[in-house]
Image (tube, rainbow, N blue to C red; front, side, top):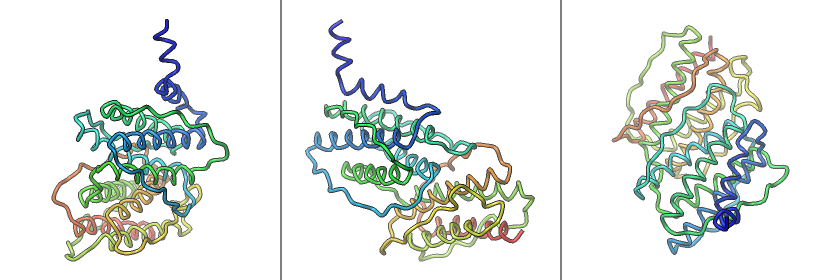
Length: 300
């Protein structure tokens, strides 16, 4: 009986209780609470590794919807799985992107799994388990998105390999797959499925192409209608990194899943396979080809 009572008093039990919030009633407040607890747990792991916790940056908030937050949470989940593998733990597969409109409950479920997987790492390093943070009030998806930016900062301190062109190519290939699904649903077949590889491309070129696609999605057209409109973005200072290129393509992919649904495609979106040996030239080819398909859709 004493053992049961001891368990009830541990932070771990609080974390387990937190998982019960993954329901249709989950709100951005619940998701924010989970992300903040996740960040606290990562800080405990950083301390256990005798590393310094970085000062929190204050990125400018932009309007985000749950679909954008979900995509950022997927990126973090993928990075964490790499860290688990490096520490001898099982690396779990990324879930598919649901065909239905993303709600806070889907984001909560993914972030909770990320927290659970992080607790496994904390045990490895004998780091204290984090206390569950208080449930906040008045949080929006924008706030959760910013909190997840902090999660990425903390993961970088732990020497988790940063996203490389192979990772960016994976999301670019996924975007192209989605574009092909949309085109097929609209009866468009007369388009190039590949472009020429142009040497000398950089993450900045990739960022601009993805940004151009987001700009097109803001044009008034029934196919492009989506809650809150296409994602806005801020062009970062150069040189633009693969991580920044990956982030804007995550926003783009999130919005394209809405276009896919508008086109009548009702299947979940599966990530393309991760391939090796890719560079910015390969990434630019995929995103440029997707750009051309979007032009076809715009002119139909």
